Amino acid sequence: MALKATIFKADISITDMDRNYYNDHNLTIARHPSENDERMMLRIIAFIVNAHEHLQFTKGLSDDEVPDLWQKNFSDDIELWIELGQPSEQRIKKGCNQSKQMKIYAYADNSFDAWWKKDQNKLNTRKNLSVYTLPNALAATLAGAVERSMQIQVTIQDGQIWLTFAGSQASAGSQASESLEVEIAKHL
Image (tube, rainbow, N blue to C red; front, side, top):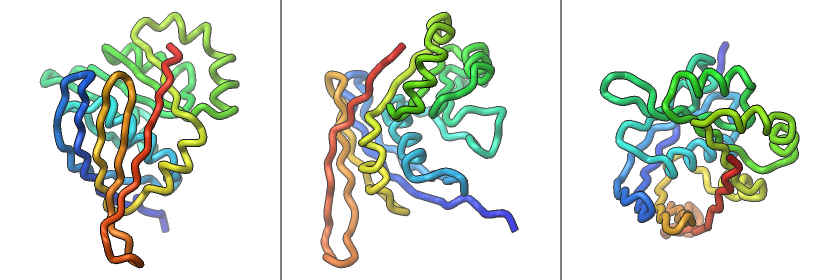
């Protein structure tokens, strides 16, 4: 019997002073059975920093033909194609050719460093491609904040991202919140 996706809910309130974007998003996230908490949270971070009323999660790991997130206009043209991790050269070519802009988000671990060194020259030729990393140590912290129902308050200013995760602690019976600062490095 095939395993089914696990459903998560995230109520995200975004105050992005850098882009003058202020909105609340009620997201339903289907986590593929092969996806871990770190990767799911990377998808949420990618959503947060690119938030738009037309940005949406796709089938991602379940469908090789689509990115992890995309933003389409009313004419069904892909304005933004977002991939996670270290996509293949063919995948990058497809994303760059089919969209106005492509972005890649990954954790800055040893596998990213090897991928970046190997493909950096090829990636530099893509004018509509941007590559971003989050500190690898942040992966465990973000994974530790995962709950089936999450409330996330986001403030973005001067390139800095502050996340506050609020939720109930079953043992304490009161509201608890955890705040952290996220730094995203741009490589391309």
